[in-house]
Image 1 (tube, rainbow, N blue to C red):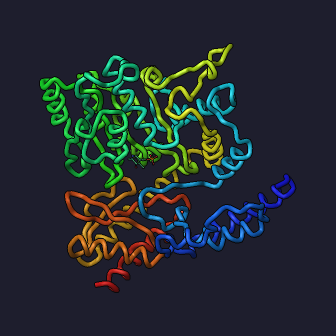
Image 2: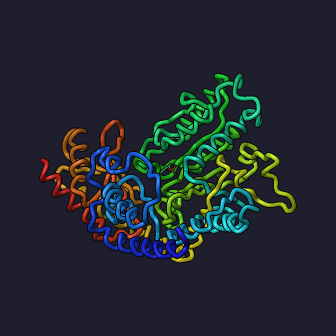
Image 3: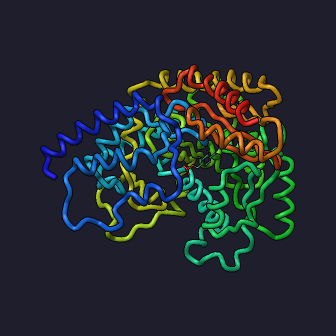
Length: 465
Ligand SMILES: *Cc1c(COP(=O)(O)O)cnc(C)c1O
């Protein structure tokens, strides 16, 4: 492809993108396909000679698009959002065009320096203390793994990487039973082991772990000769939005000199609004490591996970490796690949810069405030449907409910709602019971889109019962 053709197709694709987004509301949120249906339409072997773009693009529309779930659909109420605001898409086009590998300061000074400044913009936006630094990672899972590895190394006097874990005793990490599966996986991969991830029950209206129970578990483990290594707290858990008492948990950690990681992957975005901080952010400043995903609610195109660090040293002592071919001579600079597990790095800061400048914090706050208010209104309306009841929340913009009947009835309702296509939501488990989970958070959703969920749920429920 020559650059004239590139320019032609680039313009065509930008036009396609605008049309896609302005007509999204008329499409079903989730595609109506069966497993294997898309693969069966793709050529089983690669072509020997090149094909014209016309044909490739036509096949993209014909084969690929009918098999895509429309995450940017204004009536996407499943999982959590993966918002891609238009300015962040444009930034990603530029990043793709320059195609720089930003592993070291000298492999793209602007990328590194903008990353430091964007981390600091977000630190201020989330009211975190002066002096906290951080790094942009691909996912909350990677940030959590980095923090768990740091817990491991710190608890073993930074000998695990060199000598392995043999003979080091059982390293223990504490959290509630509401944590995301990425915490389990981090413990598997770090060599801690699932059995050494101590999960305390999340109780009360916010499904929080009990600080006294945490304290007791640490003391029991110490008496048994185990080695407490760290605590993972959450604000805005994935299932039902569980929130730990951050200040109380941090106090327990300090008393036992434990490293702390706070998973705010979803709810972190809402902390740009001062009014939510009293309930969800008190004590966050005490955490050694905090992760939040601007690629979820804030509007930065996937992927973009910010990890804040109170002191970067422990994580650098854990992950920094500097073979000769990566050494940079001259000035003292930040090389962000030393802060993370992968070496290669995309230029993720640019989309934050475009996003935040384009909307301003006030523009982003307005969206999040609307989502929270509309979720409350919708939850109240669903609670009024005959026989329906709320089972959690709303916590920020996430709540769950049950229709009359057993677990199978809940799943039937979810499946029928999603087959209808106008909205998309998912099921979950809470206290051993199946629940129906709904979050409001798509960047361009309107009050009408949100309230349509009550209509669809009522109609579909009548049809199937
Ligand atoms: C989404 C989510 C994660 C995982 O995020 P990835 O960036 O996909 O790894 C972890 N924790 C919570 C609370 C989440 O909501």
